[in-house]
Length: 152
Image 1 (cartoon, rainbow, N blue to C red):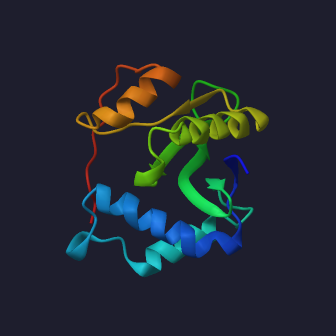
Image 2 (cartoon, one colour):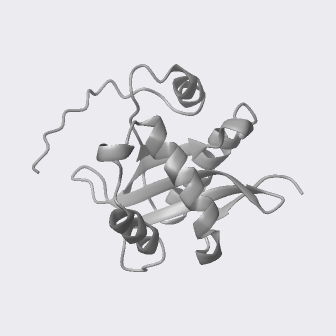
């Protein structure tokens, strides 16, 4: 069975959790800086709440999840339709280089277009060279620099 890209289902939780842990470890969110179980479960449940703008797609091959993508719709002051923020993208180490990341991004593009979104955007770390090669092939750099300020 070839890789398919689909919306997450409740029954995917255990495999999604493994991918989510890998994603968080990549960004050094482990040990004292780990995402709490409460936040993880709340995030998972948001994907299935029709009032939430947060969504999850997965890449699956033969019943095994190979990757995940999380995305959020929000309003934009310069567009009529919603904007889609691709927040998290992760592919299992063994599946890298097989087009899984590109397929997940394209799955977000399809879903965003279907709800009238006018743009999909995301950001990544400057030194994430492997991911940036994929991103450069499927999108253009906006030229913006991201600033943030933690409030807690």
